Image 1 (tube, helix red, strand yellow):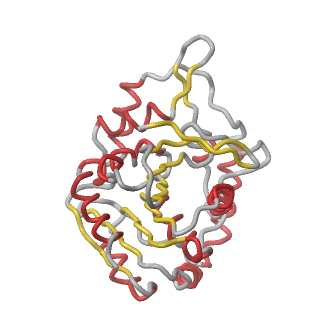
Image 2 (cartoon, rainbow, N blue to C red):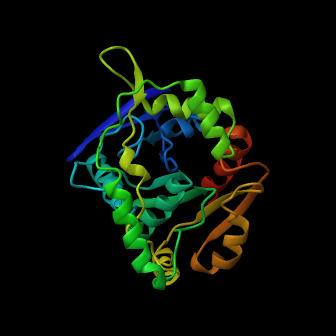
Length: 281
């Protein structure tokens, strides 16, 4: 595993790579996670170039400017600039949770760049009804007033306590939580470990897509899509897929026992399934 970075117009995107050559796999992590959550898959893709990035505001990547926010759809701009700068084509997108949503959105908007999509515990965009728009915008504005700063207060992080707290609010084990948390930390000049991720990530979205908008976008995907769902996850991918499967021209669902980060618990089984899908003619 090696460090990886790429300079974009607004800052540097950092990540991790397996350092191999071959067809490109671009890994996109979940909300408040980072590239460490996908690095567990690297050993199973030695004949691929696997790059897992930290999305802006996450991990080691740049923070948006003080006048900006983290609109979900703006990540599509970041991903496309990354693709353009590196002149990537025939990309295999592997995304977990938020990263899975972004993978499907990117494949819809730029189908000429994507060969296949792997979406781990996500089944297309999250949506809300149009009649919730007023409340969504209000709650978003209020949440942003409470998170004006683009940096965290330089308070030393108790890693053990942070791991315990993360495990209490999500179905992830301590080992995996720690690997993600450590990458979200940065060192001060005094040698303290403090949060390096942007606190504004926790603000609320201005406006979610409606179900009709989400369907219109997903209809734009031209490549095959593989959805991996977890039996014990709050995402309920199996149920969502049963309602949405007509949105995709060529898709399949595979279920695994476990929770939201099941790919970290069962990297071999998940990687075997992904390889089988990716290598299908």
